[in-house]
Length: 265
Length: 338
Image 1 (cartoon, rainbow over the protein chains, first blue to last red):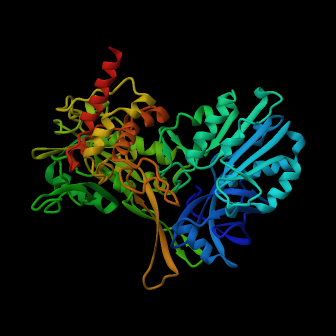
Image 2 (tube, rainbow over the protein chains, first blue to last red; image 1 turned 180 degrees about the vertical axis):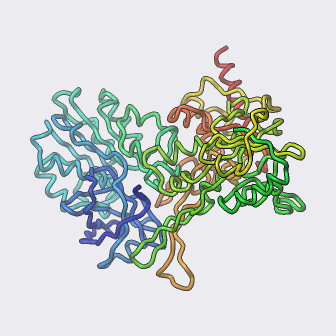
Image 3 (cartoon, helix red, strand yellow; image 1 turned 30 degrees about the horizontal axis):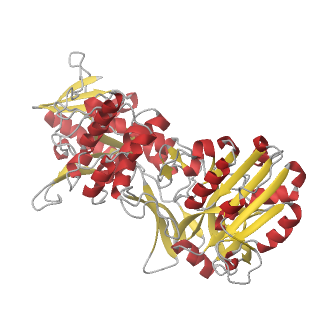
């Protein structure tokens, strides 16, 4: 019987620095399980514990974790990464299924590090733009200094329609300024019934973004959200991520809004 | 298979069991209660029938046998990990009907619900359960209301009865050794004592829904609850844990990862890196716990999680009565119907 708690050592293949606080760690992964965007791994450094980190990119023998330096484990990962290895176990959770979005007018709305779990989906449709009727990415960050995946944005902008916005910016900033919700009423659709939305970010961002999307007259089942909770085990045992009868680590973190809207913490 | 043994014979037999099995049962630990000169009844290894506390309900449940308060998952030695050995001996656990039902609740979480838990599985396979009867009800239990006062899935039943001990063995594999050297008697059927009625009666609310999450009573409980988490730790069906890494003082490159019991009533339970947390108020946490016990778990697994043992009511330092809370919820539901 498999002991799911035992992590595997994984070599850090590359570190991509986005901001002072956020790096992407490209980690070796040769596990049998196929990895989907939106899934997560438990990443750990012995002595500092484990943290659930969502997959921000999937390579041939690698997975990317975009880690924000905010907690005990993540701080330590930033200090100790050079040429080093981390322990990982996963993938866990359901993840995004790109099949749901093929042939749709897809709008992906992400706030801050919320872009990480959905980056694989953006990448997929940026590489295969013909598989969706249209793909639009609205990505919001706190300030110009917080923008993640800058190289990706250069590529995505050529392939799909991209709105990159910041909440606040210093005077003279040339890019878009404003919350992601500001851009939703102006979205144009050929057929609203064929629209699909993905919304990932902090809880309050999800709440107001979904409100705006619903105002367009979009059906609830055309919206997907991804929830972030404290998943200590990732295995449906530890209880920390439970909301009502739902275990985010098993049943989520990705939910169709029809199921996701009734989750009361 | 029923047996009737003289107490002395039974003790002699028990001595053999304790060599063959690890036997866990409720024990009275004198002077170890929370307050001065009070005892506590909790689970420990026993070597004789005498050591077992037959009268008073244990303050803590049997669950610490299957799910230790802290359990080493593996050791780190630089880049190697090593899993500690599981139990070598078979295990006998003495418990009452309510706790017997709790075993099923634990099994749902730890053997099913997504992944099978390696550590729980390996100990669970070694455990046989010995039912202790309840000739009368305890003070705070409401097992009859929860339908957990009778439990038929026991492997054996033992009852001290004056100078005799009554023994009923259901699990065949146990029969050969549990009553070795004694003949079963057809005329002494061992019918377990089950509590028929309780002093506390609980009515399960029928109309719970997402609306129940915003009732004003949660705020009221929130004002009283101090968030100590004792209700979770005495509960036979609470299963939450947190991960913890510890490293040895003598060699900081070597250590272990453990899981440690966690409580949904305590700060930090939902807190994520960066400080964002859900259910910051005690009222919301009380609601989370109560709804889990009588509503959410049932939605997922088909039975209420609570088995009505009443330990949470006994242990609360603020005298918050969970059973009273459930009854109030039921009343609010009835009022809605009218």
